[in-house]
Length: 233
Length: 269
Image 1 (cartoon, one colour):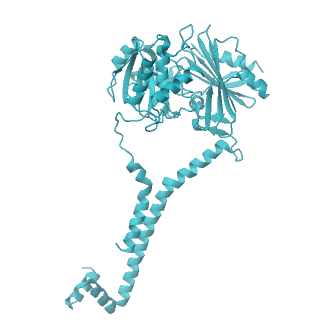
Image 2 (cartoon, helix red, strand yellow; image 1 turned 180 degrees about the horizontal axis):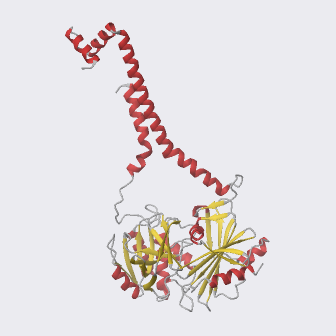
Image 3 (cartoon, rainbow over the protein chains, first blue to last red; image 1 turned 90 degrees about the vertical axis):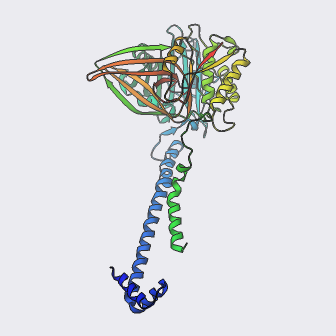
């Protein structure tokens, strides 16, 4: 039997029954023990409460604060060039896609005085569609894309141009999958071929070019197009 | 309740608060009321390399010239239903010319044309509205998709029939193959799931997996079976070819055996 229970039994034998009476009697008879015991229990309660609070705080931190802390800087990276990372990352929610704009990439280049490469294929294709990706936040043109259908080869070619520091989520899969390398005119082309669709990516003079050829037998046609584009420099 | 207990209770409630969202989420029981919002195609997150001794393409059949490859344009939030519907309409416009008035969806070679900023855009928004996209809740339900597409086809002078090709894990692959062989596309209603791109290398295939982030509607138009002879035995992979409706990855493979909420062969005449 524990010491405390022995004391309780002894007190009850003196005709004291209620808990408060027992406590009073204990305090009277053994003031040092009771004071110590109260303090110990209070300390234990405080410790338990502190542990619960710490767990609660940690849970809130993990569930709420950490994701915010991780997501916010990523979002800022997309719009703020003042930080260390000058890259601009955009998801589909960040930009508008306009199919069939009035101008061609060639006309845009001429009017804007920019120095990117493009295919002068407007006389060759049966149809040419120009697509513009514009930032919702500042109206900046993030990407220009042109698709042409070449009936002689029954082939679609698509050229997309971004600045080298602009990353659109739309191209994330392409960038990840194009993990083979081939050198064309001193430019490293990252490329891949999937189910008759050959895709190549390379950079030149601050711009990133994505070339996709659909309905091809092998990758050689892709490298021909890359060379053709680089020859327009 | 004394003060200590109240504090303990508060602390426990605080502890539980961050997880309440998870507890209140509806269970993942699929019903006809499920909404299809399209989501986004998450970039390749996994790759499997299959090293083989030999490789044989057992079957590789698609509808004639595949399907058009349309995608959502700005102002079409959660518009995967309208995009899939437009792909179906563009596909059949080759055979029933009034489906897209004053415009042919194909070139003289029979290859489907690229998305047009005028005619296809008008078609997309027409279907978007007919399907009541985002009216009741984000996206469309199966019924809203089916009624919206049917209404468009009937209003342009044709009939449309939906034939179920199974649900859940009981997708009727044999019936699907028959549909493809008869040049009929199938619309798939799927939950967040994987799409695959197959990269052929020397004595290796690399299978790249991307993930669709939300419930999605897409169009299946072919099947592809490849048998590998490995150093340890054989393996046969079976895929559906799908027009995803996503820009960047307009076509991809969908694995047979994946769960589908519904699949309907679509006939227009």
